[in-house]
Length: 364
Image (cartoon, rainbow, N blue to C red; front, side, top):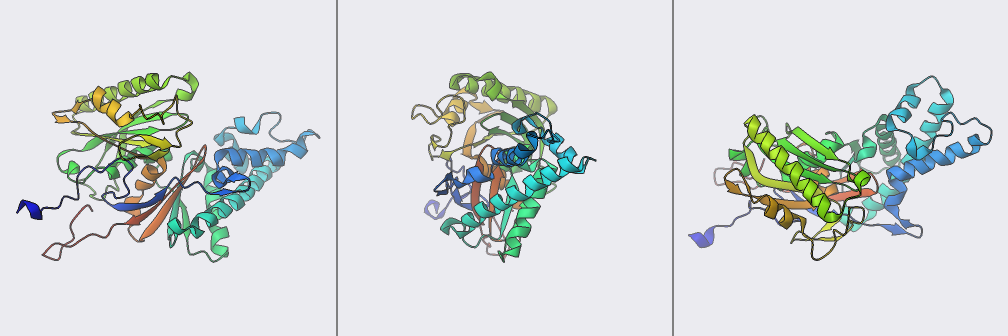
C-alpha cells in the first residue's frame, strides 16, 4: 500500500520549477543585444535617463520646468503631480518620457514573447517599484496599446497588489496547501538591492481558498543600502526582524505556520545557494559557503511547536505568484518587474486533477 502513495504536496526545493499552482517555465532570463542586456532598456533607471535626455536641451535656455534638480532625484510623487498640474511644459515632458519608455518596454516585451520560453504567453502582469506611480501605470497602459496595435494577442496589466505587498503575498504560493488547514499566516521575506522587507501574511484561506483575499498583516522595512552592512550583518538584522514579527504575531493570537518564504534576486539553486544575479546585495551572496535558508533555520529552528521550513525563490517569480488567483482564465502568463533591473518569469497554470468522484482536487 505504501508503494502506491505519491506525495506531490510536500515542501518544494528552493528555486523549484514545479510549485503547487504553477510550473515555472523560466525566470531571470537575460536577453542581450549589441548594446548589452535588454532589461536595462526598460528599468527605472532607463526612464530617468529618457526624462533627462528630454530635459537636456531645455536647460541651456533656462526653460526646464524641473529646474536644476537631477532627474534621478525627482520623486515619483513629483512626476505624478507634474502630469496633473497646471505647468503644461512639465506635463508635456513627463508624457514624452512615458511615450518613449513605453516604446522601449514594448521592444523588450516583444523579444520576450518571441523567445521559446515565452511562447504562447497570453497575459503579462507588470510589477516592481515603477508600477507604484501614475507614471508607471500610464507607461504600462501605453505599452499594452502599442503591442495590441501590432496584433500581439496579449494583455499587459499592472500587478493588482501593491508591489511591496506582492513580494510577500507571493510567498504563500510557495507553500503546500496543507499548511493553510491549521495555520492562518506565514512569515515572508522580500530581499532587494536597496531594501529588505519582512512581513506576516494572513492567508484568509477560509474566505478564499485561492488566496485572493490574502493580505500583509504587519511588515518591517530596512533600507540596507543606506547602512552598507556586511553580509553577516545583513543576516543578523534580518533574523531580528523575523523574530520581532513572530513575537508580534504570537501576541496577536495569529496561528503562524512554521514556514518562511523568501523572495530573493538571482538564480536560486535547489540547495538554497544563489548561482548568479545577487550582485546588488550586501556582501557576496553567491559564495558557495553562504546559504541563507540554512542560516535562517539555524537562527530560527522552530516556529510555535514545529520545526521551521524555509523556501526561497527568485524575486520576480514570487512577485508574479501573487497573481495566481487572478490568472485562472488563461493557461500561460508572465510577469515583468520594473525596478533596478527588469525581473521576469513565465508560468503555466497546473491542471487540477480529478478524484474518483469527478471532483477537482489539489490546491485551489
